[in-house]
Image (cartoon, rainbow, N blue to C red):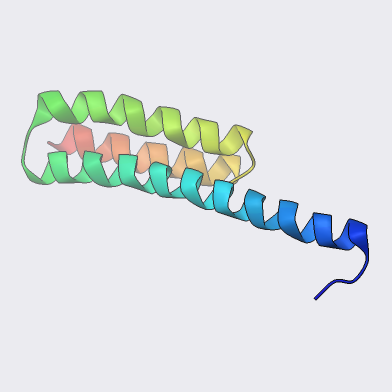
Length: 86
């Protein structure tokens, strides 16, 4: 455990940021998972709307530094391919 006041504060802010990033990653994964369940149910109308939501959350994750931009591009491409195959 930290003894210096600045180190204690740093540990608290690091923990708060960790929880915040974890929540953002979770919402990103949830958006992608909702899209995939719509694809499994062969619901093309709902899937197109959910694809927009998923791509938006992936783009936000890139701007916040949660995932790399190429990883987001790859995921968006794969999701779009699944929608086109439907």
